[in-house]
Image (cartoon, rainbow, N blue to C red; front, side, top):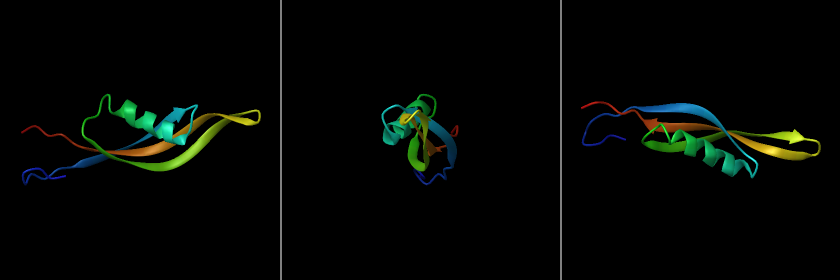
Length: 75
């Protein structure tokens, strides 16, 4: 993460993404939304997969993810 010898700091946040199409899509949705306000996302860790059920079918997939990004500092 260090650029040009400068130390860098990473931060990790936990998010829950949702999708009617599957867990992979739910995780991608979480990263996509995070990227709207967070720069320099470097990785994602899939922590947990859950689902909302109605009757006898899954109606929403949910993915809990940890998103890692570099903390930007002023020069």
